Structures are given as C-alpha cells and as structure tokens.
Image: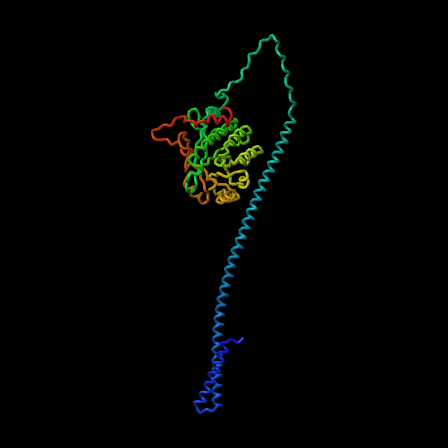
Length: 457
C-alpha cells in the first residue's frame, strides 16, 4: 500500500515542475511546447533525486538492522557457549558423583562380605565347639546315685544345737579382695560421690552440658575412679546397686542445676550389667518413671560395645527407657564404623569420640567415611558429635576443621566434686590455708533415696 507521504511528495514534484514550466512560458520567450519539455525534465530530475535519496535511506536502515542482527547473533553465540560450559560442568559433577557413589557402594559391599565371611567362620567354630562338647558329654561316665540318707537319731539322743541365721552385718567377707571390700563398704556407708565435668561448645567454650563422673570413697577419704572398681563390682554383681544410687544422685544434682539454669542437662552413665539385669533395671526404671518430668534433661550414657552387643532383654529395657522420653549417649568408641540410622532408631542423640581417634590419619582408610564428614552425617539423623579427651590446644584447632560443636576433656576442666552447700554449677576448689575434710557432708536425703532405688543396703 502506497504511503500518504509518497503521494504527497509526488504531488509536490508535479506542482513544482508545472510551476516551473508556467513561469518559463510567462516570463521568457519560450513557447508552450518548450516550457512543457523543461517542466517534464524538471519532474524527471525530481523523481530521480527522490528515488536515489530513498534508496540511500533504505540502505542505511538495512545496514543498521544488519548490525543489530550481528550483535544479537554474537550475544546468542556467547550465551550458547556459557550454557555449553555449564552443561559440561554439570555432566562432570554427575559423573564424579556417580563414580564416588559407586566406589562407596563397592566398599560397603566388600566390608559387608567380609563381615559375612567372619560370621560364617564364627558359626563354623561354634558348630565345631558344640560337637566337641557333645563328644565330651557322651564320653563321661554315668552319674553316681546320691548316697542314702542316714536314719534319724533315736528320740532319746541329745538334740543338736539350734542353728542361728546369719545376722546382717556390714563387716567385709574374709574371702573378698581389698578392692571388693572397699566397694562393699562404700555401698554400705553410702559413700558414692558424684563429680561433674563440663561439656563445652566449640569454639566458644561455653558450658552446655555436664557429665556425672562416679567416684567411690573409702574409709580414708580416698576416691576410686570408675575404671578401678567397675570390673570388680560387675564380677561380684554389685553394679546394679551402684547404678541405682548413681541415678538417684544424678536426679538430685540435675534438680540443683536447673534451679540456676532451666536448660541444664546431665549425662549419667549406666553399665551393661544393670541393663541386662531384670531386678536391678526394674528398680532403676521405677525411679526414672517417677521422675520422667526430667527425662529430656537426663541423658543416659552407655558404652559403644554395650549397644553393639544388645540381647533381647537389653533391647527391651532400652526401648522402655526411650518410651519414657529418655535420650541416650554412647562413649568408649574405638572405631569409626558407626551406623547412625540404627543408633537414631534406638534413641541415641549423642556420640562421644576421642579426639585422638578423630584426628588419627589411619582412620581415613579404615572407615567408610572421612572423619571430617562424620559430624554432618550424624547431624542428618539428629545426633550430636562430642569430641572427648581433649588435652591440648592443638587438638582444638584441628577439630574446628571437622565442624565439631562440642568438646570435653582436661583442657577445659577436670571432674570436680560438687559442694553440698554451693550452687550446682560450682565445684570444690581448694583455697590457700584451708584443709578439706576427709569425709565431705552428704547430700540431704540421698541415703534414703538410694536405698529405695537400689534395694536394702
């Protein structure tokens, strides 16, 4: 469709050329035909000039459009190049992730096959042992019948002296070892003391939790560490009574802690012997049931080997504690082969790993995961990692690279006894010129509570 401007220009050119012809005819001596030829020539010139100018303008417009198009093509090519590089990087990441996952699966399968082979070997050894015992039992001579009881004495014989029942006494048995004698005396005298060691945040080193460390006090006022009396107490079947006394003391300490800080929590250790003893555990469970309002703040701690070797009875008891809202912690970890999903399902919310084990370079090849990634892995299942036995600043600096949030050890504070007349978050600190008594005052009412929780002492 012809534009209006083009029509207007054509009319103007006709008018200009016509005016020029009329002006020449009127003002000059040219006749009409000559003036018409001049007007036609002028019209032709104007048409040619307009056509050339329009062509040049269109060419400049086309050149501008071509330049814009070339710029757009260049931008598109650059964007395509960037997209190609990003796609190549994504493909490389996918390939590396797949290869790492494949390697982990292969290593996991290899470790599982190794454990299955070890289990098969143990089963074969057990079968051989059972067969050997059966052969031994078969080769034994028949049992000898019991001797015939002697006839009763005649009625005129002298009556034997009456046998008196043994009186309850706190005197130690002569056959007991010295350590066992000390343990029995400590239980009888209610000399089970609680020391507190803080668990701090890293790197701020603010106290977040406390751990109750058990000490037995002998007649001279000397304290025995847990490692000195627990093996003998477990062998003598006394750990149930000790654990019940410890749980009662921990509840008292926790109440005192929460008088100053409502968010305070306390770690309390329980032995495998108590967890597997129905009578001792029943007394402990009754006390914990009566104090389940403090369940979120009392963390029950077990050895890692205890949770690895749980039997049917121990599993039932652990589930009973979890149903009442108590959380668990594990310590004495000797390797980094940890199954966080299984531990989380059992109610474990804390894992204590020695700092030396986390920083051991040999653990990188011995475990399925790098020690630096353990904290993140446990955090996905709601488990906090605590680095324990920290004794120097160098270990703290190295552990910060592992994103560990909590630490415990002699570098921060040693276990200290709780003063009965002081706030719960302070411990005995000897002052210059002051001698501490051999027998510190007992907590009020502890003996009676311990007897109710641990049986008659």
